[in-house]
Amino acid sequence: MASTHAFLLFFTNFGRLHWLKVHELPQLGRAAKGKAIVNVLALQEGEQVQTMLPVRSFEDAAEEFIILSTRRGVIKKTALAAFSHPRRAGIIAINLSEDDELIGAGRSTGRDAILLATQQGKSIRFSEEDARAMGRTATGVRGIALSEGDEVVGMEILSGDAQIFTATEHGYGKRTPLSEYRIQKRGGQGIINIRANDRNGPVIGIAQVVDDDDVMLITDGGKVLRCPVDGISSMGRATQGVRVMNLSPGEKLVSIARLAEEDVAPAPPGEDAPGATDPRDLAQAPPSASDEDEDRNDDGGSD
Image 1 (cartoon, one colour):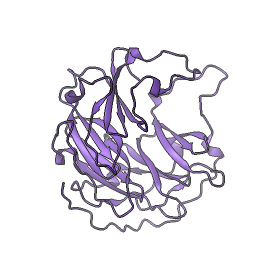
Image 2 (cartoon, helix red, strand yellow):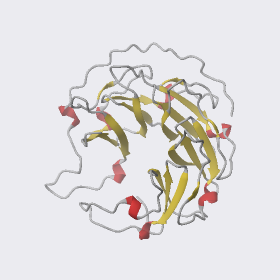
Image 3 (cartoon, rainbow, N blue to C red):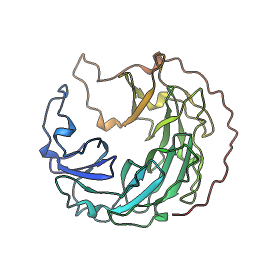
Image 4 (cartoon, one colour):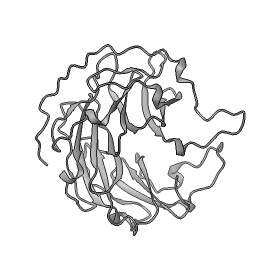
């Protein structure tokens, strides 16, 4: 949610920032289709919005930072104030290599912890104080050392006693307490987040959740499932998870999103909330992997 006087920062896969005031967006009803983002922002061909962050006041957030993460495991920390004077065509938020793209952005206090998760089921948790603040056009530093063929699929700025929900391509998932992700040194190979194998498929995303949240699961076939977090099994890191969504043959889970309780508007009387589906209709298979940990090369790394 954002005030009409707030600013919206749109970070794209090209590592660029586009900036709008909330009142510049069309105000439509809940059931309206809305306006395509390409008609609101001056996006280049192939450019897509990856993250949107609301900012009420740049002056009030002068001590905050923006944390950026890329698919190749790079992270960058930049003062929020550095993004307060954008151009209509967008400005550089991070300098990317040719084979890389931005996958996530988040606001931080300068004293938070960061969690990165990869497609092959690895993760690393480290203090953002391990990453020095840099200018807008800097490249950043290594957040996690990736194995061959692996890539980062999610980043979270951690807070409180939340849990990490992890979902895989074949419709499996789980939530795991933050206490199971020990703090490590930035740039290491990390530890197991979930056992990604032929049964589960690769990891497609993570979300920081609490019991009162819902998560939205979206497939490449256009199906959407809204599922309460407290209906998803909580288990250790080194497990495969359970089925959270039934998929048709050949269908894949491609995206997830957290829906906080305060973000969900009530539906009119007699009308279901959009995308709502009863998760209890799903047959959840019990986890078949042991909690045996295979963590290797946990720490160490360089910029």
